[in-house]
Amino acid sequence: MDAIGVFNPEQANALWQDFLHRQQQQPGTSHNSRRGKPVFEPGGRLCVILDAALAKATNSKTGATSCLATVCYWSVITERYTESVPVRQVKVWNHSETTAHAINTFGWARWIDAHFWFFGDCAAMAAR
Image (cartoon, rainbow, N blue to C red; front, side):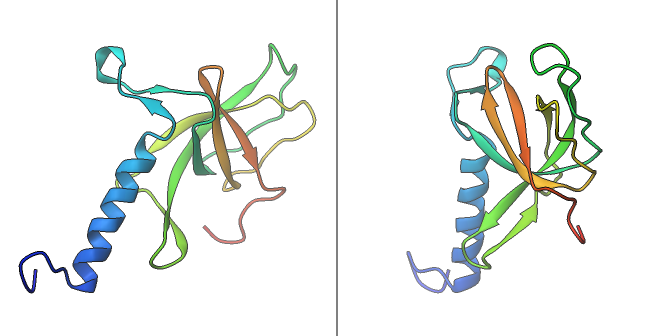
C-alpha cells in the first residue's frame, strides 16, 4: 500500500481478482454442506473449456456422457477469460442426443439436478 487504506492499481487488481476467484469457486452454492464440500444449488454456473471430446448421449435420461472441463474466470480489468490456476476441473455431462462437442469447446456448465450440464459453442476454439 502506498498509504494507509490506499492501494496502487496492481494491488487493487490483485485483490479484485482474488475476490472474483473466490466468488466463482462456488457459484450458486451453500456452505451448509457435509464433509466441508459445497452443495451446488440450481442455476449455479461456471465458464468452462472441455478437456476431452464429449460424445452425444445415447439416451437423454439414461445415456448421458461426461468428461472433465477446465474452469475459466472473467477479469473485469482485462476484459478476458483466463483458465484457472491452479487448474480447477469439473465433471460435465451431455444429455443431448443430437450434439457432440470436440475437445477445447468453450461453453458453460450449469448445475442441474446434482450435476453440471454442459452447454457449448458449436465448434472447438481456434486456439486455446
